[in-house]
Length: 191
Image 1 (tube, rainbow, N blue to C red):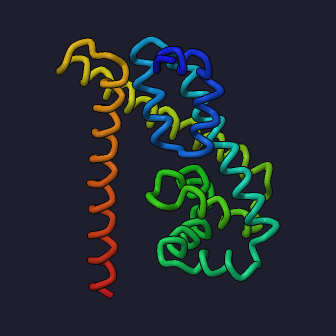
Image 2 (cartoon, rainbow, N blue to C red):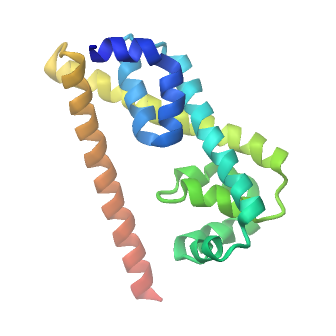
């Protein structure tokens, strides 16, 4: 079975399931696939947003119902989570909309919000805004990467196109991770 057939067979449900399991990588790859015309761009964005919203709401409910357990409390005491907690207290709406854009906060952020007094309906509405913005960003980056790859290499077989896109994505994540690590290290040294 070719990669094109696999994508066409599983299509948008595959994007939803993949986004639940992996998140950003699948949304990015969905953008590359949309660039190739195998799936409609708008539907890929909605499928990625749906998968992200499912995960966020599940994590919120875990925070709501298991937030007092020792394991969860240990995770919530980590430094970056404390920074999100402070933002939630001062700026709850932007913090709820934007937590998934903070490196390393996607799942733990929703759990943290579940431990607050924020109601589920308010969380779900604000999270819907956040996941749509996130899906537009990630799928858009994938679409842009697909365009750039086609401009540089021409029309490649899909597996090569995706392999180059994954390499670009991994390099970008590694660079972002190094930047975040250095900033946290510098902030720790200044305290």
